[in-house]
Image (cartoon, rainbow, N blue to C red; front, side, top):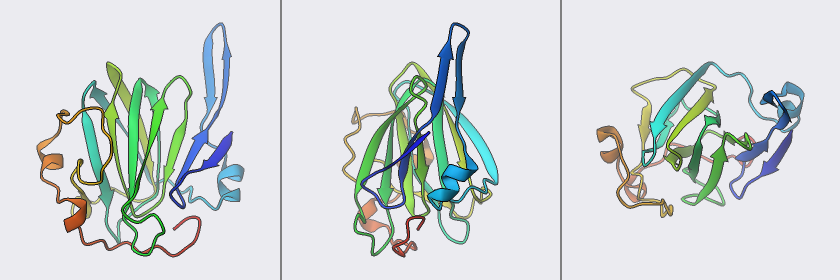
Length: 186
């Protein structure tokens, strides 16, 4: 398993060990020793998965304090364009985004620290994305920013969106409660 830095502090792309043979594949998605050596929070409280069709865009989501959380996400079926946006005041990458191609073939994952908005666009016919989070879902703290307000080069200007996602404020109008503290796991 390899943990790779991204351009956004505290956000990592993780390439798991994947063993293939004539039966299929076996993928190691978690190693407490390795995650802890990077000072990554590993106390996942809840786990979800979403099933989405081609052309669907989900995001850009996050939970605000005191219910903010770290996320570990990966695709078990399909292929997505995944994106994060840094919302942490004082971060050297505040307001910047980074995109990743997550897919079931490579099994790559994304570790997303508190204070980053997260979203994805489905490139394949269907995709199943698994989310591991370090706090419980809190509807009153669950929010987002508008999907097209951070400059992310999504594959289309007319994705399939939920009414909720269409109603989020733009990044420029979002008053962030997140503060970057300079640590790897901020």
